[in-house]
Amino acid sequence: MQCETIVCKVVLGHVFPLCGMLTNLFILLAPWKVVQQTLKTKQTGTISTIPYVFLMMNSLTWVIYGFAIKDYYVTIPNLQGYLIANYYNFTTFPYLSESRQYLTINLILSFLSLIFIGGIVDFIVFNNDTTGRLILGSICLFILSLFYLSPLSEILNIIRTKNCASINPKLAFAVVINSALWCSYGSLLGDWFIIGPNGFGFLLGLFQVFLLIVYPSTLEKEAMPINADLELKGSASGDTQSIDPLETEHHREDMIISINK
Image (cartoon, rainbow, N blue to C red; front, side):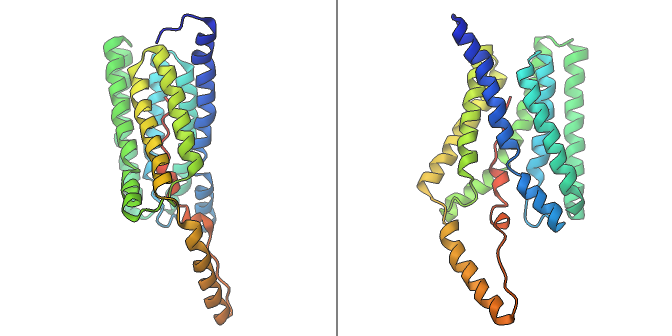
């Protein structure tokens, strides 16, 4: 995309990425309550923490890619993502089962090795020329593709149950807006490593919005009788019970598609 006017260059080159940074931060902070609940209860329950690993490694690769193309609009939001994802991982790690801790460690070490090799090839072997950036960008896309796969099982479950209770509507719309902004910025740069994944993220976000329309959430409808039933059972035994709303929303962070490149 060629910008001929100053207004076009300012809007696409500065306003859009700045807005993308804000929407990206909103998306990154979405799992915050769930992580704090883990600290409080000292257990992760059925929450999947693997997306946190993918988020951390995905952000790190794009931080390096941002340095390679000398674009701080790419580097800064992904640096935010890397730091926040680190917090999520280190906070939840002590409360994982031994097998899940082992898986987390192996994933992190594997990704770090791949990223290290990509960085060596780009900055040392090819001296950050076109070939080196192509290899580094390909590694970014590979890790990002794994990150995309993490919520697919939940999407299939939504289609099967016809219930979108696990999708946060605000996040779904934020993903659409965030991806559209970064896709536009990538078009200005002519960088398909930015356009491609954000274009896919935009379509995936639209699909989540479509699911919200076709399969409305039944969470609120089901919550009242469940709560009422537990209230009655609790009062009969002299112990009133309640449902923590965070427990019913623990899958939502898996639906976050942070495509901020």
